[in-house]
Structures are given as structure tokens and as C-alpha cells.
Length: 398
Image (tube, rainbow, N blue to C red):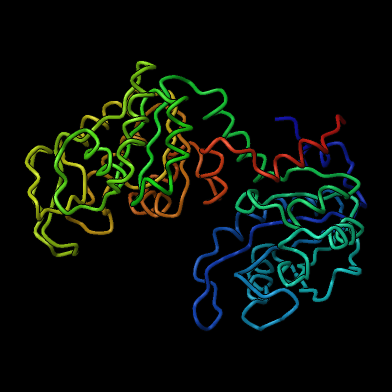
């Protein structure tokens, strides 16, 4: 992917004295009192900001937070808690600037945080008049927000159209490199784990990956639908019987390429969906009418783990069972440890996947952990993200 990288501009001294506008993803969770409960995204934004400051730029940073109504400021929509946390991380004051669309005062070597960009009228629909005003604020636009790369909004797309220079920050560049390595130029065999409650929400991903991967591991409710399609009983487990033909088509597409969708040979069941429900391991052929399948069985988990350890590239999206319940976490834990121990390049994304990675302490053993949920899924679907598209259009050789 041909895109201009902010790191290259800085290395060549081209950010010195320039007005740099960074679109970060600072959309962090908060409690009822407005206190930040998890600051990973803020910490992930710091390298780009430091890079700009070290390069001698006048730095403006903005992000969305929550789902505010355009043009209607409410205290809970403010980036004030983010400004306070950024000040701590950078070891310097980061002023919060409101009503900034028509002009920002910031000198080289300084950094300001611009109030929640989704408060600006026209942001969500990428209105041209707003985009041109945003572009006029800067000499260099830097997109470092992969989590919003699948949306064409004022601060993710419009500003990139009209800014004198548009480039990718270090976080966005790392996402692009990891996704290219995993999907465009993978080391074979390429294994993908796609799990979740519904086939319908990930059908396009499954179809797209069926033409690329050597092994397509399905888990959760998705696996139940595939088991049903393979003629196995699933009791009262979550599934989508109306999508059996779609599931069979995916299996057939894989088989035609000499690849496979491994169907569980054993499962862990319960009679109720509860953390304290007694768990029973049984053959996939022995599931009873009143059973709920809540995890893959140990035999299936061991088989999949062995295959993952011999993979060349692994893409992981979704836990394979109800890993939040101790009795039904073995499958996800085995998969997680197999990915950690595999020499394969691995990339993982999605909220539940990140929770599993954190639970099993394998953060440092996954090749790349994606910061974007919806954006990561759209790349797996084979879509070109708007943020990537506009940066490619604006690419110029230095």
C-alpha cells in the first residue's frame, strides 16, 4: 500500500515549524463520574504526538469520544479527562481547546487537544465546508486512528482530501504493515479463527477468508451453525438454521481448494447458560436435545492447537467458547496458548479477543494486536477502508 508515513516526514525534517493536525483515537471507557477506566488508546497515541513535538511541529490532536449530538455540547462529551491523562503521560500541560474549527493558536513545540471532533456540525457526514476548514488549520494531516479508519468522516477523510499533506501516523502505519503481512503476503499455512455468536454478522468475512486461508477455524455460535450444516446435533444451542446453505457453501469453497473448516469432534455442554452450570464433555455426535454447547471439547482444542503451532500466519477474531465462565474457557485458553507458542506471525483483533489475550497474559506473544474493532473486521471482509483509500490517493513520493 503506497501511503506517506509521518515518520519519514519527520526523519527528513519536513515537520519542523509545521502545523501538524493528528487525528487520534482517544475514545476511552469512563465510569459514571467521568473517570477513565482504561487508557490503552491514550497511551497508544503518545508516540505519534511525541514524534511531532520532537520534530519541532506545532501540534494539534483531536478525537471523538462517545456519541455526542453535533452542535450540542454536554459535559459528559468533553475530552477534559483525556487532556488530563495526556498531560500526565507527556509530562507537560496539554490545554483543551473548544470551538476550534475557525482557528487554533499553537506554536512549534507546543501541543493542544481539540475538543471532541464529533461535536462539529458536519463531522459524521463529512460535509465539504467543514472538511475545507479543518484542512486550513494545518500544513500536515496525520491519521493515527485505525479504530475509525472504516468511517469517512470530516477528521478521518475530508481533511485528508484538502490538507496540503496527508499521511499515516506510526500506529496506523503499524496496522497497515501487520494486515498486509497477514493477508496480502502471508507465510503459509494461513489459519484464521473466526468466532462469535452469529454467522450472519460475520458471513461476509467467512466468505472472503474462504478464498484465502488454508484453515478456517470457527467457534462459538458460528461453530454450532457449521456443526448443524455438517449433520451434527446441537440441542438447543445458539445457531442460525436459515444459514445452513451459506455455511455449507463456505465449507465447499474451502474443500475445493484443498483446505478445510475443522468441525468439532467433541464439545462441552450444559443444561443452562450460567457460570455455575455443571459442564459435561461429550462427543459431538452425542449432544442431547436439551444441551447447550458452550465450548469446544478438549480433543478438538488439542487438535486445533497442534495445527496452529504449525501455521505460518494466524488471524484471530473471537473466543471459541464462553471463556468468561471457568468451566467453558478451556477451548479459548488452549487456542490462546497455541497462538502464543506458535512461530507463526499472528494478528488479533476485536474486543472479546483482546479480553482473552489479557486474561491469558499472552500480550507479548501475539505478533500484532489490532486497536480497531469494526475496522479490523472490514479488512477481513476484503473491504478497502476509506482512511486507507484517501491516503493512497494523496500519496506523493518524497
